Image (cartoon, rainbow, N blue to C red; front, side, top):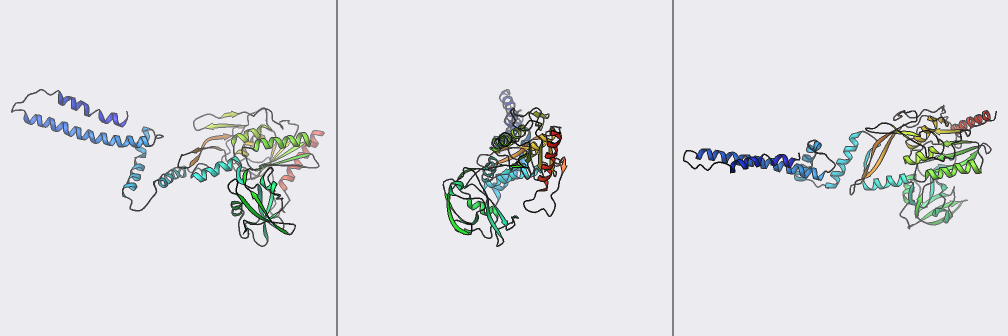
Length: 439
C-alpha cells in the first residue's frame, strides 16, 4: 500500500459510523453524543496528522523516483538532515553543491576506487579520455635531460621535447617535427613548468590558434598552429630482429585502438613478413572493454576471450570476433606486462595466456578485474559504477592479485635509457620458438 492509501482508510469508516448514528435526542443521551463526536474529532485529527505525514513522505518518494517504498524509511535521516539545513542553517550554501556532495559521499562509502562521482567537467573529461579524442594540435611531448632521461619539470638541464607528431594533425601541416624543443607557448616560457602544465596550454578549443616557439638545429622560430579535434595514437609498431619479429605497443584502449591494431598486424604479417610478434601492454591503463575483446580476437579465434559476471548472475563466456589476423598458432606471441598493465589490457593478456596463444613476459600486472559503466546525472555530472566482474578463460578472478607472467623479468636498477631487458628477453624467447619450429 502507498502511504496515502493506508492513512486515509482509518478516517472513512469513522465518518460513516458517525452518519449512521440513530437520531435519539433525549436528555439522557447528550453526554454519549458528545463523547462520540469527540472521538470522531480526535480520530479525524489524528488521521489527518497521519495523512499529512504520509503525504510528505510521498512527496519525498516522488522526488526520488529511484528509491523504492521499502527504502523510504532508510532515507528518512538524510531528508531530515537536508531539511534542517535548508530551514535552519545560518550560513550561505548552494543546494546543488549539497546534493553533489551527498552523491559523492555515497560513492566514497562504497570503498571502491573504480566507482566514483564526477562533476560535469570531470565526467566530460573522463569520456573524452576514454574515446582517445581531444582538442589540440596533435603533438606528443616529454621533458627530458640531455641523456634522454625523464624530468619532472623544465629546468636548465631538462627541456620540453616533441616526442611524436600525430598523423593527419594540424602539427603535421604546420611543419612541427619530432625532437623539436618547445621553448614557449603563446610567448609564455615553458621553464619551470611540468608536462601537464605545458599540455594544458597547448590544448584548447577547436578552431583557435596557438603560437609555439621551438628550437630546431640551434635556431628559434615561431610556429602558429590552429587547433582541431585530435584522435590519439595508441598503437605504434616496428620490425625487430632483422625483420623476423614484429613489435606492437598499445598505450590505451580508445575507440580507434582495435582498428589501428588490426592495421598494424596486417602490415607486419602480410607486408613485412614477420614470423613472430611482441605485444607490449606495459603501463597500459586499459579503456573500452569492447576494444579489448576485438584486440584479443586478433590472436584467439576459437575459444572464449574472457567471462563476464553480474552481481546476481553466472559467468558468461565472451566469444571472439571472427576473422582475427594473428590467430595462426605457428606465429609465436609474447606479451610484455608490468604493474601498469591494467583493466582492458589485462583482459587481452589473460586471453592470450589463458588460451595458450602466447606467453606473458615481465612482472605481475595491476589486478583490476571489474567493468564500469558511465552514467550521466543531468545537471549534476555523472558517475562510473562497477557493474560486472571479468574472469580469465580459466575462470580466475584476478582482482587485486594480477596476472603472473610466464617468464618473470625485472628491469635492472641501472638500466640505461634506450635499453629494455624485458623486450630483449621476449625477442630471445620468440627466436628460440622459431628455431624449434624450424627444426
